[in-house]
Image (tube, rainbow, N blue to C red; front, side):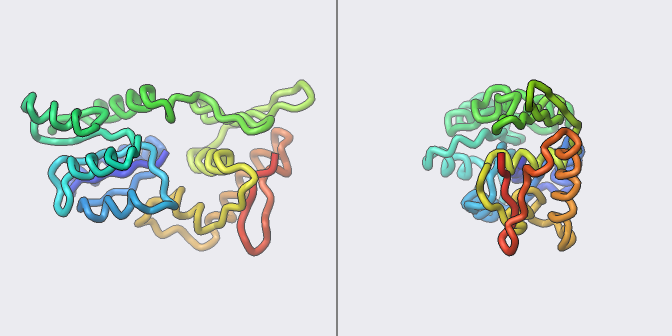
Length: 228
C-alpha cells in the first residue's frame, strides 16, 4: 500500500518513514502542504492512506483534509498533532479525519491505528483479490493459482506482492515501466533503469512455479499486461 506522509519535523518524519517502510508500505514523505496537494492531485499516483500533521507550512494538514473532502475524496486520513483539546479533536474529526493521534506517540500505536483504518475502510477491507483463477492473499502475502481442480500457492516478497496487486487491479491494461516506477517506488527514490524488468522477471518465475507461466505479457515498446 502507498501512503502519503505530511510531516515537517525531520526527526519524526524520518522515524515514521523508516518504520512504515519496514512494514512494506510505500511512503511518500513531504514537509510542505502545497507539495502534498500536488501529490494528491497527480492522477498517476494512488494513495491508500494519508497521514497528515495538522500544522505544516504552505497548506495545513487540516486544510488538505478539507480540500479532499470537498472533492468527495474518501482517502482514509490519520491526523497527527500536538493539539490535544477536545475542541481541536472535534474540529479535526468534523473536517473529515478518520482518526486522530496526539504527539508524542509510540510507533506501535501508529501502526495499530493504521491497521484499524484498514479494517474500517471499505476499500481496504478485502482479504483477497481475485482475477480469473489467480488469488492474492493479503494476510499471508501469498498468491494462489487454481486450475483443473488443483490449487498451488507461493509466498511473495513485499515488492513482488505490490507488483502483482497493481497488475491485478488493472487486468488487461498495458502498464508502462514509468507508471510502475511512479506507483511502486517513493517519488524521491532513484531505482536503477532496469529495476522494473528485473522485478517482473522475478514475479514471472514465482507465478510459473504454480502453473501460471504466461500471466504477464510483455507488450514490446509499451510495457506489460496481465492476461488471465
